[in-house]
Image 1 (cartoon, rainbow, N blue to C red):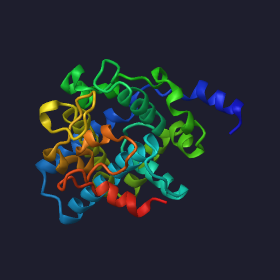
Image 2: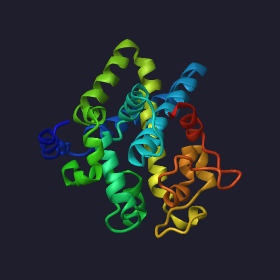
Image 3: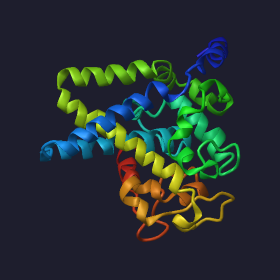
Image 4: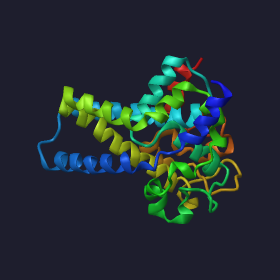
Length: 267
């Protein structure tokens, strides 16, 4: 990409308002789906298997792709695999790759559990769990934290067309099969967001776990969070070694299934 187009991109890219256009509708629809599941006949095994499978796929998109691959450059993959993983993350509705990574690199890790950390529990539990997502306009993020990604045409494409990719993907699957959309995209996106909320909140409360690394923040490893967020539960390990894509293995019980998959697909 030429320097002039890079400059233009930096000037024009950060115009996405915040996540009102994805988080709010997906959460409302997710609660509606949950209500229908609870008040109707119990879903069959196919539905349960579909939900669990696609929750894993979306968590892979956020945890392996947005977090470990793009944010921290912990490993590399082929271009087709990278594109597929970005799509897995995008359809979860948690923001474009550039929005997510600029926030994570430049504000969370640089100022972890300080005033500048956008989703620290020091600002209140519910703020760290979900409310922060509605308060951060993309235009307020500094693009210097993602200069490398502004040169990646695939990442830029997913950022520029984030809402279109998100809602066209959901609409196409819903058109093909409404029930399949509920169980493969809508409800998994709902659950995945709350899994991420567990990570941004509980993983930064001191009494919720233990520290393996001495860090300046409140990050902890938490055994009881593992069933909800898998390897992301070893959050202090991540803050101690941000570039290491394997968050487990410091203790024998620290299992990280996301890394097992990374090991299979990395170059």
